[in-house]
Image (cartoon, rainbow, N blue to C red; front, side, top):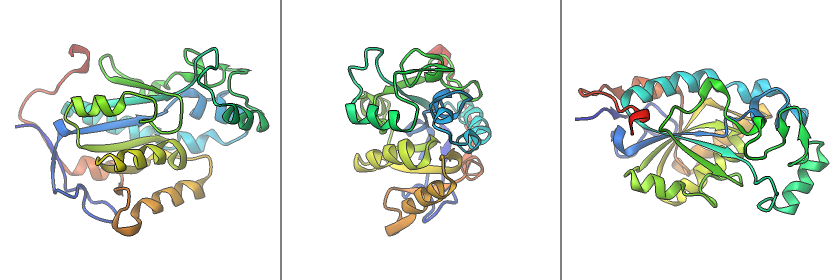
Length: 241
């Protein structure tokens, strides 16, 4: 017997729809907790936004990570970034970033902005991956586009996803929509996400709850932890996989 999660006190329904789910069928996805999005001198900081807003979900995410690692849950981290030669950077994306003073590929305090291998591209220490945890590098907003994420999930028998990360209204929401269309049962955590504008964060969460949960459900990390039944066997250690 393995640990189970659910039912989670969530909005607009108790998550998951099927009552409870085995941890072995569930993955925690940590989306784009990179210096470029929540660190000093990164992409978001260079655009003039308040990084305290994008960092707001870090403490709860770190606490949840510790909890699910103890259960042996599959943990997946994503990073948005482009090849150093910019061959996978659409010209309109590059143009838009230049208009706001943080052109992708240009030099910044954390190296070249949103470029693979640069300091700004790396995940911040608070939620850094452990050895053996899955890393998915993506060129766009959604974690399914031009990546192997769907293959990884199906290979592991995953049917349910818990989402954390930044930003709520862009990369997290896009990934949740992509996952929903592929049949995954999704839960987004309000205290483990953040946006460059508080109203965008609130609106993005509200959109999930419409039409009976059009993309899934909204809950908090405490709700997830409270709805976990402990395992009676040793936890999986990713570094030994």
